[in-house]
Length: 144
Image (cartoon, rainbow, N blue to C red; front, side, top):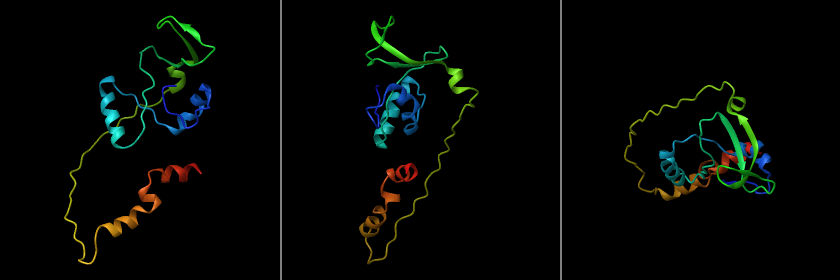
């Protein structure tokens, strides 16, 4: 349970079956881990690294905090594997996603305000709107 939970009382199978709906999963090369951490810190977006790719074609959920755990010969620790499935059963014939980044140079123009207007007043009015000033607005609106 090396990741943040919205509800710490969930069992491991409840986490597996439901908590993922509040999160996104990414496969990241080990050498890109620090870069992703920096981006997430900058964007104030929590990130947890919870697994690794072994190449064995399986997805195994490990709960090292379980009391009814079993010995794991690889680490000499007791571990529990409530999920141990072939990756193909989980993903099926899912198409591979490909993302293309096209950078566009911004075309900034100098800000021109009337002489009787300052930036602070309109900025304050705009940022007071929940749809502008809160990253949680859409999440809360959709969740309800």
